[in-house]
Image (cartoon, rainbow, N blue to C red; front, side, top):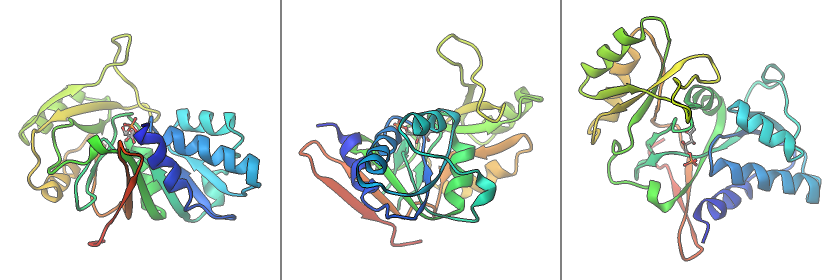
Length: 227
Ligand code: 5RP
């Protein structure tokens, strides 16, 4: 069973005609974009869409989804995006695909953030997945050392050819191995205090619902009761 696909397709059912929609990034958001494209073609669904990465922009256009410039929209009705990890409070680690900054900006301006994931992403505590942090290239070694003072091992991400990974915004991504993150809210504040950190991959009190695909073909829908 393709858990990512069934989770993504369930979330796409929430999109109604006329909505303003944010398109996430990654291999699970991929299925959401493909399904939205099908609904546009088959049902004549009309939406105004923005994308959270250059890759998702391209994918959307290939699937017949017209993109609207950000400045033409004040808010979005919903965004559908993936996650690298999520816990039962719908706190997330994101940025495995390097799109965390655009994803967070888009999520912040969305009335609803719908997370789509396979069941392996649901964890008791965040942190087994190294926390992605987007940093400015200037004096990046200093920024890395400030990150490590928070108790992690921080490494600049490389691409498949071994070159430094550059985000869509021209920045580096530091993958920070903290191990289990006991107090994500506190860590978020500490990360924000480091000059050179543009954004970090903890998404707290942002997700409204999570759609978790299971091997038996079912999709669990988790609600954020805290937000
Ligand atoms: C990209 C992200 C993705 O949503 C996250 O990495 C999950 O990706 P996938 O669905 O491929 O596992 O945050 O920056």
